[in-house]
Image (cartoon, rainbow, N blue to C red; front, side, top):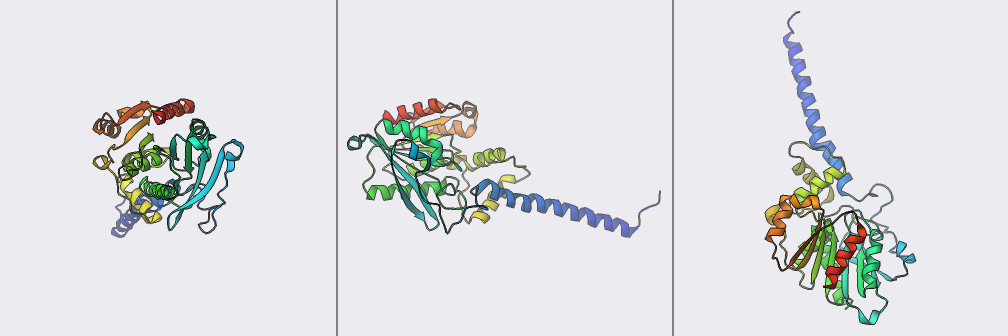
Amino acid sequence: MGKLSRQTKETIKTIVVLLIVAILIAAYVIYPLNKAKTMFAREDVDTTFSIDSLPPNEIGAYEDSLLVVDTFRIEADGLTSLACLEIHPQAIDSIKGTVVIIPEKSYTRENYIDQVKMISSEGYSVIIFDPRATGRTSGKYFGFGISEAADLEELLSSLFIRTEIVKPLTVIGYGFGADAALIASSEEERIDKIVLINPYLTTDRALDRLAQAFDSYTFPFYKTIIFWWYKIRSGFAPQYIEDDAVTPVSKNTLLLVRESELDNETVQSFISNAPKELLTQMTVSDDTADLNEKVLKFIQK
């Protein structure tokens, strides 16, 4: 077999280099750019959603719940209008307290009707809203719990001004909503209790769970790259929260996590660093009724 000519060798080298460059561009630019939109933007960002025409803040599925419901909006910032519901107990003259529920990313207030019914039936006023970039609330991208914490503080400030909060005040958060409740509780003195249901706690844990949920391919420096593209797409600049930057427990707190999560180093560190008199830790499964019972008992303590 004859030797390759110098020109042929150079051509092969050029092709190899171009292939490597193409692979790197696909892996570190095209794929994460598209994946950042899929993972972090609202589901209807390319279909029915328009930032200029929000859907009406109707009570939706709550209309058939036999609950006493009011609707209102809170302008959390220049781009985010929170679509809120306030559910009043039947005995409105003897309200036992107020409960705010923050759904998980991409979940709307309709997903929590059973929990709202249970809490309201026990004499509590309940406020629930579609989180940013979800349902009837505006915004294109969610905020890793940080922007959601700011949304919660704006909501509480408005409600306290309107004297619509009856103490004690409990905030229940799911996923990023739990992170928001934890972050806000460190600054918001008016919060008395928080319930954290499967919180992410750190950005690493959030990206790991989102990558799994969206069947994302991972590669060297995946988390750094995907988070960078998230910031470019969303226009947000949230802190990359690591284990040493997790907000510590400062209020009476119920932590509900799956049993499989108890071995996680971040969760273990969070539990061990929390004051024992402030933290109650329990496991949670797919049994919604059991979860709702645990949450209600904590609220009533």
